[in-house]
Image (tube, rainbow, N blue to C red; front, side, top):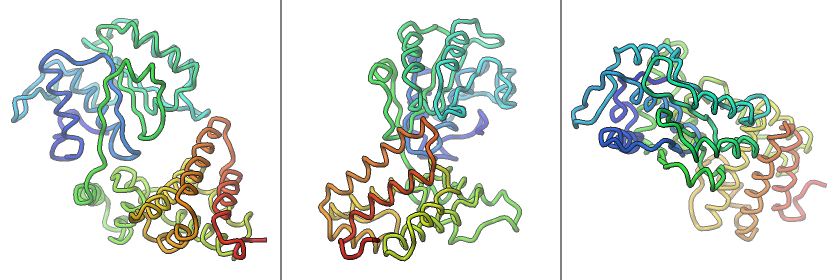
Length: 347
């Protein structure tokens, strides 16, 4: 979690444009009551939202070198925020159902209607607002339509995941970009340097984590800390061997079980997106799968890649029902198998 006195423009420069925009809105007293923070997974949406919350809560705002407001870092509000115990900040995120539920939004509505406990504002963060279930989304509309003057809502949305148009139209959107490769690597290496020497990964692992994360640095850090790379390699080997008719469907699907459903869908989505890029004359992001994907692009029309992306979207809808990673992997593997020439498909 970021401290309020972190220099966003220096530490995470890809977030600087959106950060400066909020600073300017605050300075000009035209901050909206609700912001959508849109961006790819792992670019720093939650970090950015936490920093904005700290800025909005500070009682003794300072100015940065550009003359824009920044949190002081030492007032009571800043100290409470840094400790993670500020009573005027609430975070609502998907629970066991993988969705943000209506009971959570009702809690948010009660929070928004009450007076601040220690500060002059209340901040409500909905982490993964794109996973509001339909009842929760409809309940949130009332708060957006009749906002409290002392409450700011920060809605985090992953790119490509839909929000109700009625919610989107009542919020202002800030899109956080994926950093260029040099900035992503610089940030990640800086974070890894804080680890004991014996826990620091090899440079090849760092490069691979960034590749798999699409240069989203916080996601790459999660991959390095969680053992994801080894699990990914096993899943990719299962995928490749199944496509070559060298592994059964059941065995290939088992390799995805350890990844979990979200990561399984993420991988299949990445491969399908690379297939679409290759079909359009572009280059794949996942270099290790390039040869196989080039082969498939060469013997299939471009629309087949979009069919696969549609199959992944169906899998995301099944997330609500706690679908099995193995069953979803089996379904998607069979869809991919249909791209192989008939003589090379498993019997």
